[in-house]
Image (cartoon, rainbow, N blue to C red):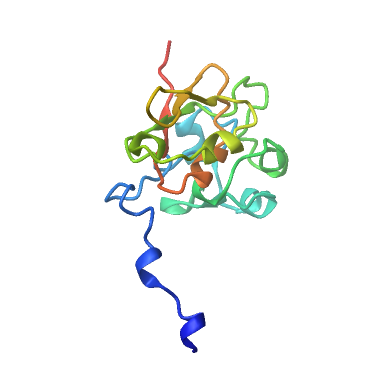
Length: 172
């Protein structure tokens, strides 16, 4: 390899200094959209993997125990309903208004919170649940409107420091 084509490994970890020591993953065992009864899901899911194969975004993966889960680090849910439509076990309730029972949270690993300009999350947010508020003397800071967050997870995969995670929505 010539000197001109050599990789400068010192720059490969540019954003690592801002990220958490532990990689933040979406909710552990995040269940599929429109599944609101965990006990029913675990007792009736036959682990046929049809939902995994049907997912056009390839975000449904096999989780612990072989049950399907959503991995938002792979992308976002487009709410196409293919997982629900193909399920032979009738485990999905498409009448549920909100497909997911989680919302996003942004931790201190966020580049903007470290005074580095980044808006990757808001660029991916179709519902505009994440907006950036201008701050005098600093870069714009993320503001989350949980009322419009649909839990699609698009912001999770887009975040270069894994500072966005999913948390269960408070029951009212």
